[in-house]
Image (tube, rainbow, N blue to C red; front, side, top):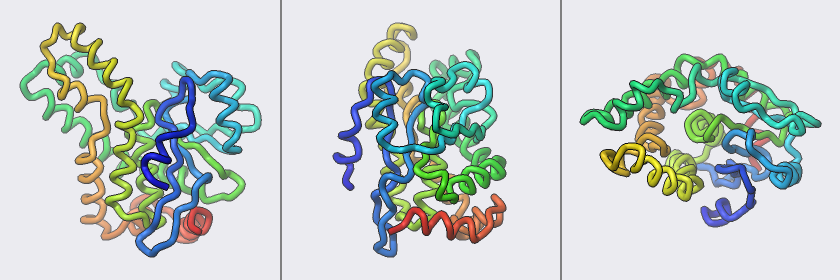
Amino acid sequence: MNFKEKTATPQFERLSNFRDIGGLETNEGAMMKSGILFRSEALSKITDKDHALLQKYNIKVICDLRTPKECIKKPSPIFLKQGIHIINIPLHQQETHDINRKQLVNFLFSKSGGANFEEFSRSYYHHMAFDRTAQIKEILTILSHEANLPALIHCTAGKDRTGYISALIQLIVGVPYETVADEYLMTNHFYESKMEKLIKVMKWITLFQVPPERIKSIFMAQGNILDEVHENILKKYGSIETYLCEACGIEKDVILKLKNLLLE
């Protein structure tokens, strides 16, 4: 499955960044199955048409990686709970952009704002990778049960928390890191039109004092941050599988079950 095929369909009305994380070749020449695991942004704004489209994927479990506060503020529609098991596993104590006003002003206007936001993002990913290991174990254990598949993974934008978990799953089944990194950055393609609108609005809000590049750096997926956390994992544990076993406490048979379910 190539990039064009993965971004061409489906046509949701109010659901962005939805895609299959499978359909990828592994280092060993096997394929990560399509139609098993999907990712997206939050489902709080979906329409009846979107819901009808989702039903075609026969999703049994939704892993909601948002905080309880986010879930209360923007809950999943009630009709989604009919026949679908929604499991909330907060992968972080806060949303990537759930920052206070003072921080946002600093990121946007100060000379070092870009560097400050990059440091914020670096800390955010480090926390997910090395402090939320129990949550990672819970997510992958749930997805290792055939009865829970097909499944959908989402957070708020489907960018950072969802991107990190999706990357771990793709890596553990043997998808080359270069492919995983490209898949991670596909989020920016899905939000291209939204980003253009956001930049126009932010220009007026900031009285044209903030360059578009600064706005993009804050609201788009940054590959260098994923690169860094991946390198840190390999430096400390040697492989993704060792990281999942030793840092996250995931049993090897759970990883084997996940591989068997996702590979063909």
